[in-house]
Length: 134
Image (tube, rainbow, N blue to C red; front, side, top):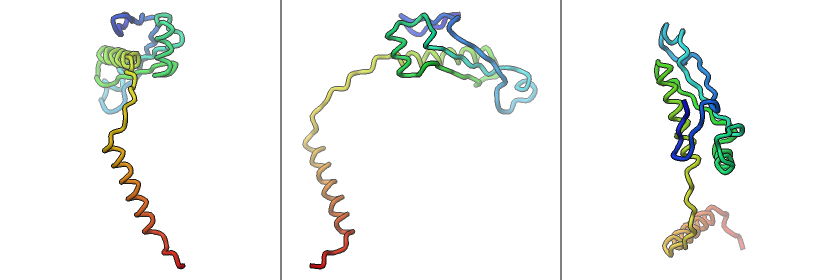
């Protein structure tokens, strides 16, 4: 089943690599015999479903591959769903446009506070010095 990230991006199943293993921690016979831990890997470099700009953005934000692990529940099916949701959330966050920072002018109060703190620091350090013997 394909993984829907947003209105314009859907990742086909063939681009996702699944692996399963035993979940860590206590759990008795069920945990020892069941491969409920789900690991989902998405290779950004080889994914043909991404545009060049999406690939660049994801590479900068997340690296060459994205790995998501879920071992929260005792059910492999639910862990698969959790891993899919986590991967979709990470990709969605990485692709979200970042607002441009607008430079603002320092306020008079912030400048005065900074200068006051510098003077106080200077006076404190001056008091630590040995007195001059002229």
